[in-house]
Length: 273
Image (cartoon, rainbow, N blue to C red; front, top):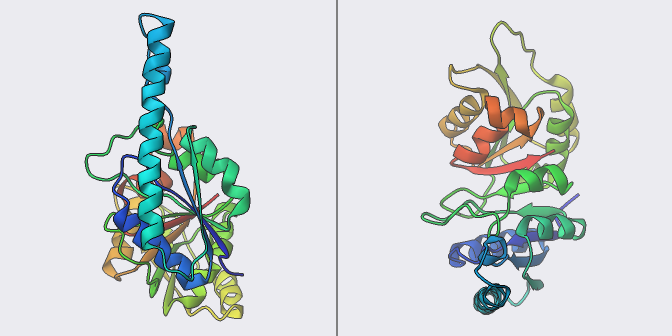
């Protein structure tokens, strides 16, 4: 298994330079086709105006501004792409989250970036990462805030024997095979026992993955914080985890590992559901 098609969304309000460099390097590393998508909706679509004519005029202005920005993004990406990469571009005036989910059937991996500093968390102009994770049926890679290239020398797998984690490990195999050190991290919850995941390790070794296991007690704050802390201490390049083992609403209300990783992970992050 490898990644032969990578889908990436370019937010119209974000700087494209580092984002383009990251995904072009990633696609080149796997010899993958890169599908670039940019979608946004007019802000005034949800705003009431004093008359129908004024609403139409405002929407036309907003659509024209979106399309102009998308043309600029397209030119920038095509100028910087290596000739050997096949890059497809698609621009739509539509809901970003829905667009990505609908295009997911054409990709092996989805890449969504964190918000730039000062960029508004506006669901008409940037995708809902949690919704994509739950609905797309594809692994989701979220680069670190620095957007440095993904070397994947050391990878931490947040291990718990659940469907979501097993799916994440299978989806991450192209990266796990390349790593020099793969750590299956089991976080020991209060009053719990944890044996090393020998069966999972044996299966990864069949795929020529250099894997080891560690067990760490949960920190007082959360499992998510423990995962990030351990990964940071061992200088991991990437965290792999199953996403939303509990319902998204429950994690939003009570907190959870997935929610913590989405909001606070300083490293590259690959999630599957």
